[in-house]
Image (tube, rainbow, N blue to C red; front, side, top):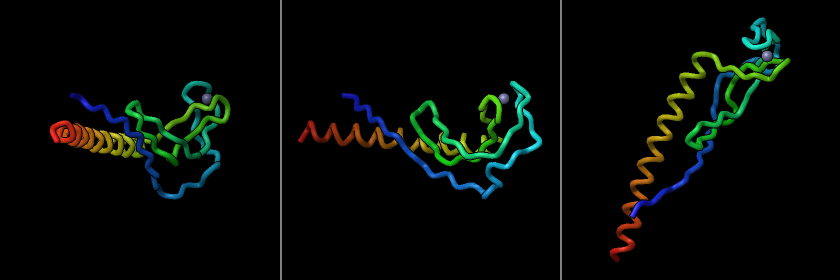
Length: 102
Ligand SMILES: [Zn+2]
């Protein structure tokens, strides 16, 4: 028997307080619009949701960018969370096995 646990994790991502809503001199790669600082919700393919991620958003087309450090942190956070989810799934499978045998 295989147990599939669907776990959705929400993590409050605390980053240094930037100057939110402030326009930067950075330009959008796609349309050339100005980027402003914002916070966004990041949805990873594994169902892990990270809220309040500092980002840059294009004022014209809405494209969202993360800086290199934030991307690296998001990667690590998602990988670590995915690992914990996998371990929990194994524990759940073991729990169901002992339930069947009881
Ligand atoms: Zn744009």
